[in-house]
Length: 318
Image (cartoon, rainbow, N blue to C red):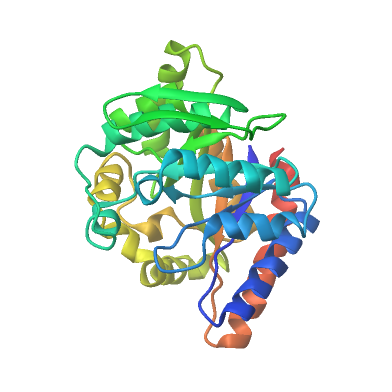
């Protein structure tokens, strides 16, 4: 199993924001991590722009988006942007995409959110054709009528990963994408629900075994403080649980909230939890560092201790 880290554009002025995530990606590459995953927060920095900037500061690490909402732009435009960014990053982009949630697409952007699975299927037909360029892109389906030439391509086509939680989306991920990017999925929901469905769909479509990228919070702490770490995860990250899509996924596993997903405790406890995800079928972990402490100095010290342990575990998991 490969180990990666989530890197987000933290709140603050734009110059400080950019300097911060560039420092984070330089650490991740130097620490030997396999990948870094950039979430697309609705009101914050563009994640593909983050990848482009990070590509100029690194040479090896995979740079993924987790994820770009599909409805915000035409598939030809997304393919053009992704292929351009991939070229600038030396072929290291992993393009994570998804239909997002009704409260982002409908309530924030004012766009339709009916039949997101059907829209996703039609979108991926165009996106895949455009990402496989150069050449003509000729796709007609229920949503798009596209006859568009493209001069862009890649020596190795960047993987397209679909955020997929339910049965229909997992089938689409197996048939049309190279894997899935997950959040709010615990070991049982992955092992019993996600992995079997996406793997079977890929096999039926004659595609290679898909990647399963699971995002989880990680908190290095004394084992006596595990409950405190879970409470902190619930305070900081609980907004994710408000989505009906995530609630349905939680119902398929043992976790009841994001705190239950948190790999918390000492190094042995965290490694044991990582191995449980590997046993469930996860090919890649994307960890969201969750420092713990009573004040700023303690939080910073916790962050750096966790970084050290994550770097050590990355080598052990290969």
